[in-house]
Length: 197
Image 1 (tube, rainbow, N blue to C red):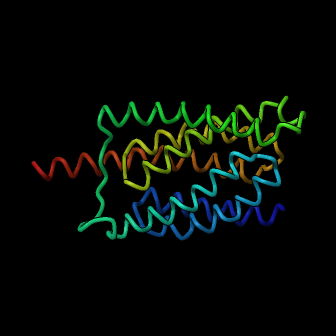
Image 2 (image 1 turned 135 degrees about the vertical axis):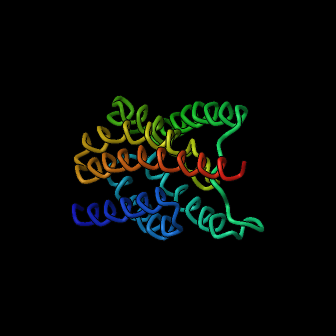
């Protein structure tokens, strides 16, 4: 699986690179990346991550639609969450975490080794952050990068513990790109606000 993982890693890095640059190529590379990771995560018994990759596939299609201007009359601009949207985002992380955790326990109820490991806990946790990040990215909210950063930090050791070292390196690169993406999108937003005044 190493060659397949390496291809997925390269596609994923390209996708995040284009997201950081606010280029629509984020989506075709993202679609290819997550399609491969659905398989990789299932084989590695990271079932929540396999599930989130299915959601990523759908959100990449939705994001492509939104970013191409088909979701409205004009190009989607970077914006910040309101206080209410921030609360909704954090509550969503908690609700998704609890829901995914109990779904994993129910689906894998016969797999005692899996249930007694840390995987259901941590897999659910980073899945919750990534799901919220994906939704915020699709509508160009600056805060999406913060959720990616948290999820990336969690993912680095998870994938290494499953022997998916290329993927662990990928999440290290994602972490760096997410930090840069946060800074670049924040600067673009500030520049736009200054030019509007």
